Image 1: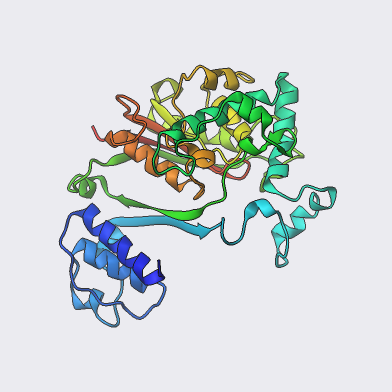
Image 2: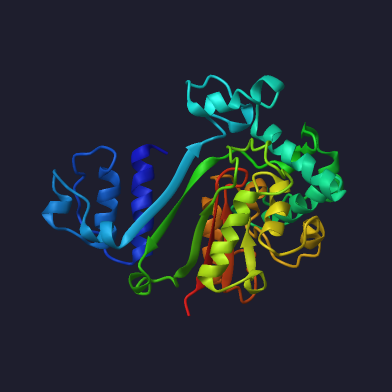
Length: 345
Protein backbone atom coordinates (compact mmCIF):
# COMPACT_ATOMS: atom_id res chain seq x y z
CA UNK A 1 0.00 0.00 0.00
CA UNK A 2 1.35 3.40 -0.99
CA UNK A 3 1.52 6.35 1.40
CA UNK A 4 -1.31 8.02 -0.51
CA UNK A 5 -3.50 4.94 -0.29
CA UNK A 6 -2.76 4.63 3.41
CA UNK A 7 -3.77 8.25 4.00
CA UNK A 8 -6.97 7.75 2.02
CA UNK A 9 -7.82 4.65 4.03
CA UNK A 10 -7.23 6.53 7.29
CA UNK A 11 -9.47 9.34 6.09
CA UNK A 12 -12.25 6.90 5.27
CA UNK A 13 -11.99 5.33 8.71
CA UNK A 14 -12.16 8.73 10.37
CA UNK A 15 -15.23 9.66 8.36
CA UNK A 16 -16.97 6.47 9.44
CA UNK A 17 -15.94 7.06 13.04
CA UNK A 18 -17.26 10.59 13.17
CA UNK A 19 -20.40 9.76 11.21
CA UNK A 20 -20.43 12.87 9.05
CA UNK A 21 -20.49 13.13 5.25
CA UNK A 22 -17.18 13.82 3.59
CA UNK A 23 -16.38 17.34 2.44
CA UNK A 24 -14.16 18.29 -0.47
CA UNK A 25 -10.90 19.49 1.06
CA UNK A 26 -7.64 20.80 -0.28
CA UNK A 27 -4.27 19.60 0.76
CA UNK A 28 -2.70 22.79 2.13
CA UNK A 29 0.95 23.75 1.71
CA UNK A 30 2.74 21.85 4.43
CA UNK A 31 3.58 18.35 3.09
CA UNK A 32 3.65 16.96 6.63
CA UNK A 33 0.48 18.51 8.04
CA UNK A 34 -1.54 18.60 4.83
CA UNK A 35 -2.86 15.00 4.88
CA UNK A 36 -3.89 15.30 8.53
CA UNK A 37 -5.61 18.64 7.95
CA UNK A 38 -7.35 17.34 4.85
CA UNK A 39 -8.67 14.24 6.55
CA UNK A 40 -9.82 16.09 9.64
CA UNK A 41 -11.59 18.66 7.46
CA UNK A 42 -13.39 15.84 5.71
CA UNK A 43 -14.25 14.08 8.94
CA UNK A 44 -15.45 17.18 10.79
CA UNK A 45 -17.16 18.87 7.88
CA UNK A 46 -15.10 22.07 8.08
CA UNK A 47 -15.22 23.21 4.45
CA UNK A 48 -14.34 26.88 4.90
CA UNK A 49 -11.74 27.97 2.31
CA UNK A 50 -9.36 28.93 5.11
CA UNK A 51 -9.15 25.26 5.99
CA UNK A 52 -9.50 23.64 2.59
CA UNK A 53 -7.76 25.99 0.19
CA UNK A 54 -4.16 25.89 -1.04
CA UNK A 55 -2.99 27.85 2.04
CA UNK A 56 -5.00 25.74 4.47
CA UNK A 57 -4.51 25.86 8.21
CA UNK A 58 -5.87 23.49 10.81
CA UNK A 59 -9.55 24.22 11.59
CA UNK A 60 -10.50 25.35 15.10
CA UNK A 61 -12.49 22.17 15.69
CA UNK A 62 -9.36 20.17 15.12
CA UNK A 63 -7.30 22.32 17.46
CA UNK A 64 -9.86 22.81 20.21
CA UNK A 65 -11.94 19.65 20.27
CA UNK A 66 -9.92 16.85 18.77
CA UNK A 67 -6.58 15.26 19.39
CA UNK A 68 -5.25 12.42 17.30
CA UNK A 69 -2.47 10.31 18.72
CA UNK A 70 -0.83 7.75 16.53
CA UNK A 71 2.15 5.52 16.07
CA UNK A 72 3.40 3.71 13.00
CA UNK A 73 6.73 2.09 12.24
CA UNK A 74 8.47 -0.71 10.40
CA UNK A 75 10.18 -2.40 13.31
CA UNK A 76 10.03 -5.82 11.68
CA UNK A 77 11.02 -4.96 8.13
CA UNK A 78 13.19 -1.97 9.02
CA UNK A 79 15.13 -1.08 12.13
CA UNK A 80 14.77 -3.88 14.68
CA UNK A 81 15.19 -2.90 18.33
CA UNK A 82 16.08 -6.47 19.20
CA UNK A 83 19.19 -6.24 17.06
CA UNK A 84 20.73 -4.07 19.74
CA UNK A 85 22.51 -0.76 19.81
CA UNK A 86 24.63 -0.23 16.72
CA UNK A 87 25.36 2.40 14.09
CA UNK A 88 23.90 5.21 16.21
CA UNK A 89 24.72 8.86 15.92
CA UNK A 90 26.48 10.38 18.95
CA UNK A 91 23.94 11.38 21.61
CA UNK A 92 23.49 11.80 25.35
CA UNK A 93 21.79 8.42 25.41
CA UNK A 94 24.83 6.90 23.76
CA UNK A 95 27.08 8.33 26.45
CA UNK A 96 24.89 6.81 29.16
CA UNK A 97 24.92 3.44 27.42
CA UNK A 98 28.68 3.57 27.57
CA UNK A 99 28.37 2.27 31.12
CA UNK A 100 26.66 -0.94 29.97
CA UNK A 101 27.47 -1.71 26.33
CA UNK A 102 31.14 -2.63 26.89
CA UNK A 103 30.00 -5.34 29.30
CA UNK A 104 27.75 -7.09 26.79
CA UNK A 105 24.41 -5.46 27.60
CA UNK A 106 23.61 -4.58 24.00
CA UNK A 107 19.88 -5.24 23.63
CA UNK A 108 16.63 -4.35 25.41
CA UNK A 109 16.28 -8.02 26.39
CA UNK A 110 19.66 -7.97 28.11
CA UNK A 111 18.73 -4.81 30.01
CA UNK A 112 15.42 -6.30 31.13
CA UNK A 113 17.18 -9.53 32.10
CA UNK A 114 19.14 -7.69 34.77
CA UNK A 115 15.95 -6.56 36.52
CA UNK A 116 14.33 -9.94 35.96
CA UNK A 117 17.22 -11.82 37.55
CA UNK A 118 17.11 -9.59 40.62
CA UNK A 119 13.35 -10.05 40.93
CA UNK A 120 13.69 -13.84 40.89
CA UNK A 121 16.50 -13.75 43.45
CA UNK A 122 14.70 -11.40 45.84
CA UNK A 123 11.50 -13.45 45.90
CA UNK A 124 12.90 -16.97 45.59
CA UNK A 125 11.25 -17.58 42.21
CA UNK A 126 12.21 -19.46 39.05
CA UNK A 127 11.79 -18.38 35.40
CA UNK A 128 8.57 -20.39 35.31
CA UNK A 129 7.00 -17.38 37.05
CA UNK A 130 7.43 -15.43 33.83
CA UNK A 131 5.87 -18.26 31.87
CA UNK A 132 2.51 -17.60 33.51
CA UNK A 133 2.35 -14.24 31.74
CA UNK A 134 3.44 -15.67 28.39
CA UNK A 135 0.81 -18.41 28.51
CA UNK A 136 -2.03 -16.00 29.33
CA UNK A 137 -0.99 -13.53 26.60
CA UNK A 138 -0.84 -16.23 23.96
CA UNK A 139 -4.16 -17.76 25.10
CA UNK A 140 -5.91 -14.46 24.39
CA UNK A 141 -3.99 -13.99 21.14
CA UNK A 142 -5.07 -17.45 19.99
CA UNK A 143 -8.71 -16.34 19.92
CA UNK A 144 -8.04 -12.87 18.46
CA UNK A 145 -8.19 -12.96 14.62
CA UNK A 146 -6.14 -9.74 14.44
CA UNK A 147 -3.29 -11.19 16.49
CA UNK A 148 -0.07 -12.33 14.84
CA UNK A 149 -0.23 -15.52 16.91
CA UNK A 150 -3.91 -16.18 16.28
CA UNK A 151 -4.65 -19.87 16.71
CA UNK A 152 -1.30 -20.60 18.35
CA UNK A 153 -1.57 -20.87 22.14
CA UNK A 154 1.35 -22.12 24.22
CA UNK A 155 1.87 -24.05 27.44
CA UNK A 156 4.29 -23.65 30.32
CA UNK A 157 6.25 -26.52 28.77
CA UNK A 158 6.53 -24.56 25.51
CA UNK A 159 7.76 -21.57 27.45
CA UNK A 160 10.37 -23.62 29.29
CA UNK A 161 11.56 -25.18 26.01
CA UNK A 162 11.98 -21.88 24.17
CA UNK A 163 15.57 -20.76 23.72
CA UNK A 164 17.39 -18.38 25.99
CA UNK A 165 17.65 -14.80 24.78
CA UNK A 166 19.34 -13.32 27.83
CA UNK A 167 19.02 -15.40 30.99
CA UNK A 168 16.59 -15.57 32.70
CA UNK A 169 14.56 -14.41 29.69
CA UNK A 170 13.54 -16.90 27.04
CA UNK A 171 12.22 -16.23 23.57
CA UNK A 172 8.61 -16.46 24.79
CA UNK A 173 9.27 -13.80 27.44
CA UNK A 174 9.92 -11.21 24.75
CA UNK A 175 7.53 -9.13 22.68
CA UNK A 176 7.37 -9.20 18.92
CA UNK A 177 8.90 -6.72 16.52
CA UNK A 178 6.08 -5.46 14.36
CA UNK A 179 5.24 -3.45 11.28
CA UNK A 180 2.04 -1.61 12.00
CA UNK A 181 0.35 1.36 13.56
CA UNK A 182 -2.54 2.57 15.66
CA UNK A 183 -4.51 5.81 15.85
CA UNK A 184 -6.43 6.98 18.90
CA UNK A 185 -8.89 9.87 18.64
CA UNK A 186 -9.56 11.97 21.76
CA UNK A 187 -12.42 14.46 21.98
CA UNK A 188 -14.26 16.37 24.67
CA UNK A 189 -16.79 14.15 26.40
CA UNK A 190 -19.61 16.39 25.18
CA UNK A 191 -18.53 15.98 21.55
CA UNK A 192 -17.80 12.28 21.96
CA UNK A 193 -21.34 11.62 23.13
CA UNK A 194 -22.62 12.83 19.75
CA UNK A 195 -20.64 10.21 17.86
CA UNK A 196 -21.91 6.80 16.73
CA UNK A 197 -19.84 4.78 19.20
CA UNK A 198 -20.02 4.90 23.00
CA UNK A 199 -17.08 6.89 24.39
CA UNK A 200 -14.42 5.61 26.73
CA UNK A 201 -13.89 8.23 29.43
CA UNK A 202 -10.40 9.17 30.62
CA UNK A 203 -10.93 9.10 34.38
CA UNK A 204 -7.25 9.64 35.20
CA UNK A 205 -3.84 9.86 33.53
CA UNK A 206 -0.39 9.95 35.07
CA UNK A 207 3.32 9.76 34.31
CA UNK A 208 6.12 8.80 36.65
CA UNK A 209 9.87 8.51 36.97
CA UNK A 210 11.99 7.09 39.76
CA UNK A 211 15.20 8.21 41.36
CA UNK A 212 18.29 7.36 39.32
CA UNK A 213 15.97 6.76 36.35
CA UNK A 214 17.54 5.69 33.08
CA UNK A 215 16.24 4.18 29.86
CA UNK A 216 16.01 0.47 30.77
CA UNK A 217 19.38 0.51 32.53
CA UNK A 218 18.53 1.76 36.03
CA UNK A 219 20.81 -0.80 37.65
CA UNK A 220 22.28 1.48 40.29
CA UNK A 221 19.17 2.11 42.34
CA UNK A 222 19.09 1.31 46.03
CA UNK A 223 16.47 -1.38 45.33
CA UNK A 224 16.47 -2.75 41.77
CA UNK A 225 13.84 -5.43 42.44
CA UNK A 226 10.80 -3.39 41.38
CA UNK A 227 9.70 -0.49 39.19
CA UNK A 228 9.85 2.76 41.17
CA UNK A 229 8.83 4.74 38.10
CA UNK A 230 5.64 2.70 37.85
CA UNK A 231 5.03 2.94 41.58
CA UNK A 232 4.60 6.69 41.18
CA UNK A 233 1.85 6.25 38.58
CA UNK A 234 -0.86 4.42 40.58
CA UNK A 235 -0.71 6.92 43.43
CA UNK A 236 -1.90 9.67 41.11
CA UNK A 237 -4.26 7.43 39.14
CA UNK A 238 -6.06 6.15 42.21
CA UNK A 239 -6.22 9.61 43.77
CA UNK A 240 -7.51 11.31 40.62
CA UNK A 241 -10.05 8.66 39.65
CA UNK A 242 -11.25 7.85 43.16
CA UNK A 243 -10.77 4.17 42.32
CA UNK A 244 -8.39 1.48 43.53
CA UNK A 245 -7.12 -1.95 42.51
CA UNK A 246 -10.31 -3.71 43.62
CA UNK A 247 -12.39 -1.49 41.32
CA UNK A 248 -10.60 -2.46 38.08
CA UNK A 249 -12.35 -5.00 35.85
CA UNK A 250 -9.47 -5.71 33.48
CA UNK A 251 -6.00 -4.37 32.79
CA UNK A 252 -3.76 -3.72 29.82
CA UNK A 253 -0.26 -3.98 31.26
CA UNK A 254 2.76 -3.06 29.18
CA UNK A 255 4.35 -6.39 28.41
CA UNK A 256 7.38 -5.93 26.22
CA UNK A 257 9.01 -8.41 28.61
CA UNK A 258 7.00 -10.72 30.87
CA UNK A 259 8.79 -9.92 34.17
CA UNK A 260 7.60 -6.34 34.00
CA UNK A 261 3.96 -7.48 34.02
CA UNK A 262 4.56 -9.16 37.38
CA UNK A 263 6.31 -6.11 38.78
CA UNK A 264 3.49 -3.82 37.64
CA UNK A 265 0.84 -5.93 39.34
CA UNK A 266 2.79 -5.58 42.56
CA UNK A 267 3.47 -1.85 42.17
CA UNK A 268 -0.23 -1.15 41.49
CA UNK A 269 -1.29 -3.04 44.60
CA UNK A 270 -3.13 -5.90 42.96
CA UNK A 271 -1.07 -8.39 44.97
CA UNK A 272 1.85 -8.58 47.40
CA UNK A 273 5.53 -8.54 46.51
CA UNK A 274 6.61 -11.80 44.92
CA UNK A 275 2.99 -12.97 44.53
CA UNK A 276 2.23 -11.73 41.04
CA UNK A 277 2.92 -15.03 39.22
CA UNK A 278 0.33 -16.82 41.35
CA UNK A 279 -2.04 -13.88 40.83
CA UNK A 280 -1.75 -14.25 37.04
CA UNK A 281 -2.07 -18.04 37.16
CA UNK A 282 -5.30 -17.73 39.16
CA UNK A 283 -6.75 -15.40 36.46
CA UNK A 284 -8.00 -13.02 39.12
CA UNK A 285 -7.68 -9.98 36.83
CA UNK A 286 -8.02 -10.42 33.05
CA UNK A 287 -4.84 -8.94 31.52
CA UNK A 288 -4.03 -8.02 27.93
CA UNK A 289 -7.13 -9.58 26.43
CA UNK A 290 -5.95 -8.79 22.89
CA UNK A 291 -2.88 -10.96 23.37
CA UNK A 292 -0.55 -8.18 24.40
CA UNK A 293 2.66 -7.25 22.68
CA UNK A 294 3.96 -10.86 22.65
CA UNK A 295 0.73 -12.22 21.16
CA UNK A 296 -1.06 -9.57 19.10
CA UNK A 297 1.50 -6.99 17.95
CA UNK A 298 3.96 -4.41 19.23
CA UNK A 299 3.10 -0.88 18.09
CA UNK A 300 4.37 0.01 21.56
CA UNK A 301 1.36 0.63 23.82
CA UNK A 302 -1.12 2.06 21.34
CA UNK A 303 -2.91 -1.21 20.56
CA UNK A 304 -3.44 -1.69 24.28
CA UNK A 305 -5.39 1.56 24.50
CA UNK A 306 -7.56 0.43 21.58
CA UNK A 307 -8.27 -2.88 23.32
CA UNK A 308 -9.28 -1.12 26.54
CA UNK A 309 -11.73 1.02 24.56
CA UNK A 310 -13.21 -2.07 22.91
CA UNK A 311 -13.66 -3.69 26.32
CA UNK A 312 -15.56 -0.66 27.60
CA UNK A 313 -17.77 -0.67 24.49
CA UNK A 314 -18.44 -4.38 24.77
CA UNK A 315 -16.97 -5.12 21.35
CA UNK A 316 -13.73 -6.94 22.24
CA UNK A 317 -13.08 -10.40 20.85
CA UNK A 318 -12.23 -11.66 24.32
CA UNK A 319 -14.85 -9.58 26.07
CA UNK A 320 -14.76 -9.36 29.86
CA UNK A 321 -18.42 -9.43 30.97
CA UNK A 322 -19.52 -6.13 32.46
CA UNK A 323 -16.16 -4.41 32.03
CA UNK A 324 -16.62 -0.74 32.93
CA UNK A 325 -13.27 0.25 34.45
CA UNK A 326 -9.91 -0.50 32.84
CA UNK A 327 -6.29 0.22 33.61
CA UNK A 328 -3.79 0.81 30.79
CA UNK A 329 -0.06 1.18 31.37
CA UNK A 330 2.85 2.03 29.10
CA UNK A 331 6.61 2.01 29.06
CA UNK A 332 8.07 0.03 31.94
CA UNK A 333 11.77 0.25 32.68
CA UNK A 334 11.74 3.86 31.47
CA UNK A 335 9.71 6.86 32.67
CA UNK A 336 6.28 5.25 32.81
CA UNK A 337 2.64 6.23 32.36
CA UNK A 338 -0.87 4.97 32.88
CA UNK A 339 -4.55 5.59 32.23
CA UNK A 340 -7.77 4.69 33.99
CA UNK A 341 -10.53 4.48 31.39
CA UNK A 342 -14.19 4.04 32.31
CA UNK A 343 -17.46 3.54 30.50
CA UNK A 344 -19.60 6.65 30.16
CA UNK A 345 -22.13 6.73 32.96
